Length: 124
Image 1 (spheres, rainbow, N blue to C red):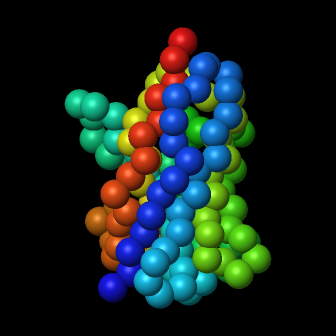
Image 2: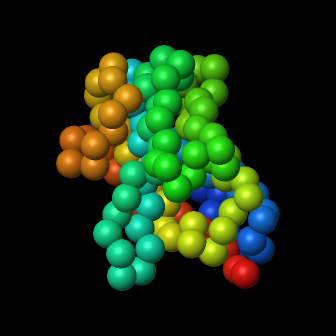
């Protein structure tokens, strides 16, 4: 069983930065594509970013392009989401999820494992 754990959430003012991390207490993540998703109160979950197992391919939602950067450490077992120029509309619970694939599509309904989330609050 792959258990994902997110960390790094918190409260920040608009324009500030946070770095989220996604790690595992189970199998190594190096063979999984990792997606970051978020869900704000009263809204549907949305995809934020995805990185493939090699770390060479990524994609981003239009709403975060140019502000968020996804990466993974050299061993591929820690996945980061660097969030800069944060806006109040970025406020949400952020989840990482893993899919055992070589692609970097990260469709929500195809992810195999999910973390419990970390809350990000951006004040204006």
